[in-house]
Image 1 (tube, rainbow, N blue to C red):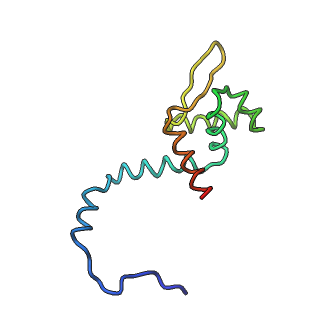
Image 2 (image 1 turned 120 degrees about the horizontal axis):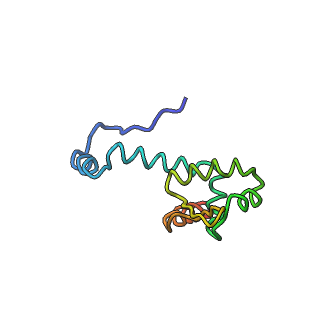
Image 3 (image 1 turned 90 degrees about the vertical axis):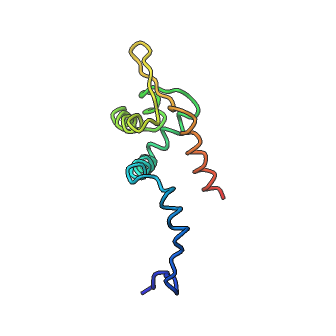
Length: 117
């Protein structure tokens, strides 16, 4: 069995620990951040976001592009919209989706950059 890494001496660096505790976001904020990253944990949602980098799309377009049913796309869009990653606008009977803001593009871009290193 592999032993977990441990300090050889128990010598807590109080000043460092106190400084970091003061700077640590609240548990609620960290929970919300973890939930946001869970949204990125589904490859279908990543494909939708990636497609929306290039163009504003309706559900029909996305379903055709991704080879999914409109119901499946709508379900994923609901998750993305709830997480404030995409927004929608109505044009007649059609609803078009786009990235909510440039932060989404940055998050995906940084992930792709990390993978290519």
